[in-house]
Image 1 (cartoon, one colour):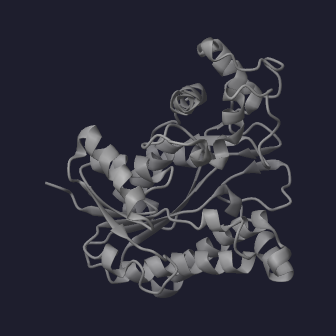
Image 2: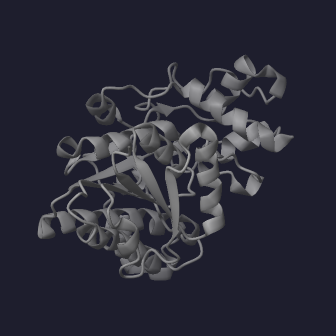
Image 3: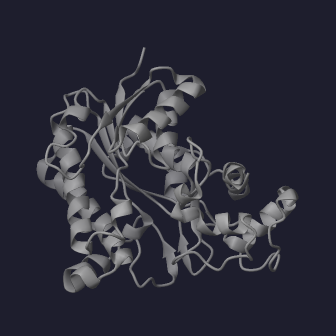
Length: 344
């Protein structure tokens, strides 16, 4: 007997499969929205292969920024987890349009939530670390207390010339502000929570089939596996978190609506980087033969998330959920086991 249905938007994303798995494990049914039904079917099959039978339903929402886009999908759900984001559109559309889509999507899902029925207890919005730090980024340790104060203004002033990074960050900030404004003005009967994360690592539920599917956050790890020299730094920072941990924090927010209501949670577990990854792989998977670089340089032992010039404090989420993060080395090795299949 299911405890209820959880709606997960962006069902075929890197994070979503692990969120669905966590929800099913907790005794819920899931309903996932996708733009493309074929992509959703892959997630559905992966969940069935794990033994979750018919617990996952897939529905098509071609344009999530359309008014009422999620009305039908939300009916009867006990929670909504809004993961869908126009990430692929960030570099193609003009920045003001990316921001508009994010705001329309955030408010649209909440309007649908109001029509979903009295059984709906919580809505969780997946935001990003990009809503927490300014661009250009100043050195420091960032937490839920911080907000990006520069990207919205840059998009307003520069329009199409603001660039993809400002467009992405501004969309996250504007979407989240609209989310909290809705809570303050409409005072809905359900709890509302935002979750933020640094770069995603960890094994996907559905293995990548082509190298084009490898997420941006794994760019440098993938380069290392392909035999390149130890790559330089990632864009802006090196902070990471395992998608299985992000899924756990999201599900905790759903299961604890009173405690999670009105909260922002930053998921940030480690700061490693390419040299750390090279050292981990040369120690634990030497047969891969990745570049050695300068062993031990450029990272701190234990990979604390608060290390590095642009650093993050994820202690609040670990504290409230009562569970620490997956160790960085475990995440890297689990991720590489999936990535390595693309080398065959």
